[in-house]
Image 1 (tube, rainbow, N blue to C red):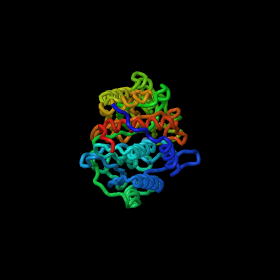
Image 2 (image 1 turned 180 degrees about the horizontal axis):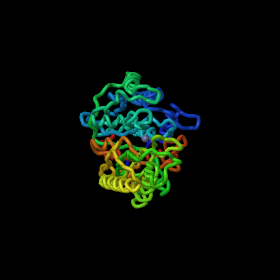
Image 3 (image 1 turned 45 degrees about the vertical axis):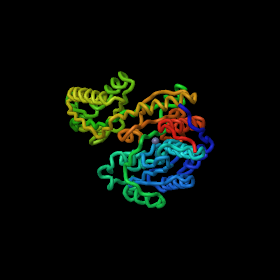
Image 4 (image 1 turned 90 degrees about the horizontal axis):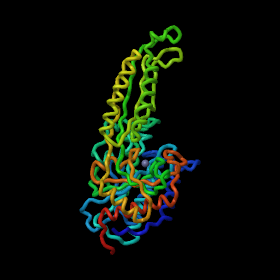
Length: 418
Ligand SMILES: [Zn+2]
């Protein structure tokens, strides 16, 4: 294995600064909602930088943006690298932007060094990964992978009543120089660099996370039905208190699911009470469960366990319980060959590595359904992300980008120099 050319770390850092200024917040973060004016400005800058280096610029109907650097045989599917440019409302400057600008740095490094790759290499900036303005997230990669838009997407509006469909059309129109292309063109492979968004790499002194997959996520909605009654006059024995039962179920779940399996994640993030009055025993409580695990079979097993525990607890409190799935995303397992390449090139560079699963969603989840895909993680300070204080050390950003460059070339079995 030969390592690729050395990337230009200074250029990468300057690009990170330039893009962080688009939607930059006073606290040093980024507010660049999907399909917003700021998002369009970031896309336009990316397209301009790519065009200046002679890369072809494309967009598809989901406003996924592609920069293509030609190879020796352009009839073969390109190798794709990239991430996203949209951010959370109080987001950081690295989530998504690092992977996108690292991909640009790879393309430019190949160009600087006159390297002819066997097929084209394409940067992709996926539309609306975050999903905080318009749900669902990973919109662009999902549409790319499935070839269809999510049900009801045309009626989707943001918090101000602005339609996704209108913003998508305006975003596409804002980049007339981009060549239209069909959805879902095949790729030979896909690698995404991203910040870890968790504390594991930093805690273990690792520089490169070799990501083996993305854990599955299942959302459950639990409804407890009891009986509305007077808070002052109803003795304990006569109560069918939906809130007391919900609290008992949640306490039991917290005491069992995660303590008995360090890979399991269970979060109750939303709870509503009916009627929701101070002096009324709640007759109905609905709460959410966000359940995650790298192993899809374990998610099934945990759901069954949760259902049994909830039924038993509800019965003892005189209530009825029902569970409903509101979302289900199976775990993704990345390509062994690609993860092996990432590990090898990182070791050859002398970077400490750690194999890991991603706790968060990424566009690579959907790309893994189409073909070989993998991810590279770099640490972020204190594991902080979706936060204006999100921070990646310059040497960490540069190392991750170097590994992306080396791994991309190795995966493509690099052509010869001009
Ligand atoms: Zn991201």
